[in-house]
Image 1: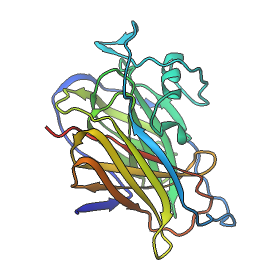
Image 2 (image 1 turned 180 degrees about the vertical axis):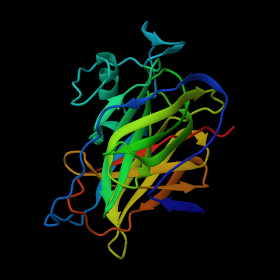
Image 3 (image 1 turned 120 degrees about the horizontal axis):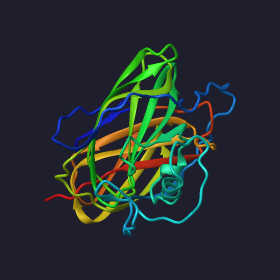
Length: 291
């Protein structure tokens, strides 16, 4: 089994554009960084849970963005720092994935792309600042997302290049990227270009089980198993550790060449203790169907 472990993710790709928008900076701030004392460590426990990728079924409604239709959801919610419509907030509140486990500092949509939600958070790994970007598809169809830009620091300077490309994001699903920054980011992102290129792949609806535990040396790890009725291609699986308030403690992912109806593996964090207790794990993956 071949796999790659990493805590910094970046993908660069070019594609033909169907929908596109070039935007300037979004003047909002991400959730603050946390540097509490190390007096509250994590008790070594094993935690189990379940997650899904996107929606198993979708329902069309009259309101739409371009030629794409938004998912229909009903539950009311209020977002603390959101630039979204009430309809978008309702949909996010009922997603079947682990989106709501994270305390997102800001949420917004690109111009004329009401079905794409960009969410921003942050965390520190020792003294290294990371910006975390979530891309959620609330359209009623698969979308391919392509964007380039840069994160800004406190003086407006560029602190990190951002390049994201993800094919066939399932309706109701979120993909998540971690970007290392040269200095503390404000959460403000200047987007040079955001595109929804033509979709050539097909997403797979999958369910997953995970266990948060430690290896024989005491390092934190997440064992996971992903299952689908469709034959899945190899891909990334990301695990995000959060505290009781949903603030990110750490993030890691792996890529496995395994494919099939069931994919199982482990994600290592190479940490034995965090400054705050790990309260939950948010799992993200966007499996595609093997042709």
